[in-house]
Length: 258
Image (cartoon, rainbow, N blue to C red; front, side, top):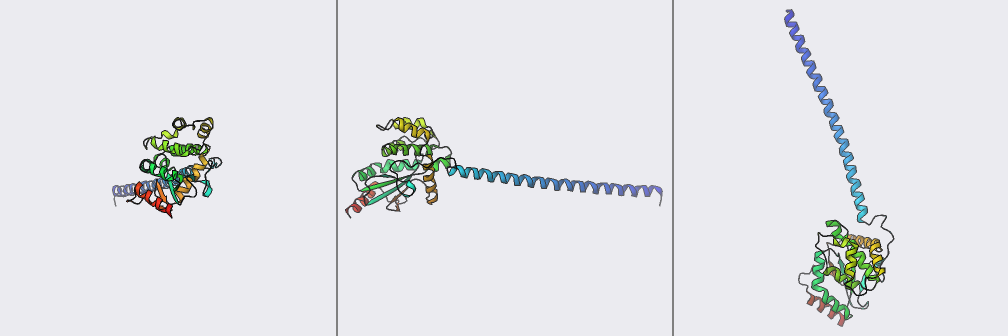
């Protein structure tokens, strides 16, 4: 074999060896990238879990929500019910509502006068229970802040009147106006005798905020599909497509006759 051929074969072997070394180096880099990406993914997942856990704490009122202070006259399990009407009435209407909820406003607009008529006649007692689902769905804190203000109105013996004002003056669902305590105090001016220093302090300090959180938790645990949830003697009448104010009145009056 000539010297020229031997040099050619040696050069080819060297090129092949160099190419193999390049491939090994590329493989090592690829493995390093995979490991690095895996670490990033794990850290990212941990961060997401941390955020979810933090938000879950916020939804439940957190550990810093303060003491649970029920409004005056609240009753039921954990004192989460605001009662209206004669306690001896034969029919009980349980109403879960959110002051930011448009469907709740629609229900109130349709049934309010009938409910007032039946409670005034001593034929119906109403158990108002407060939820804050719009805060969770849309963001903000208006549901919670308005519910606290309503509880403050209950302390003053003005719950029904203020409850009706809040729904009559309800802002658009995307407008978190009820998060502003000055707005809630302004609306209290529409209820005779409600805008007092005691009411203002209760609203501004969020006196019943932890109680509202507990009520919201009870709603979530109740398995309800949304607000309003309206139960007549335990039966969900809001889902009854045939229900009307006249039909509700008839059922309550028949029950009152025994």
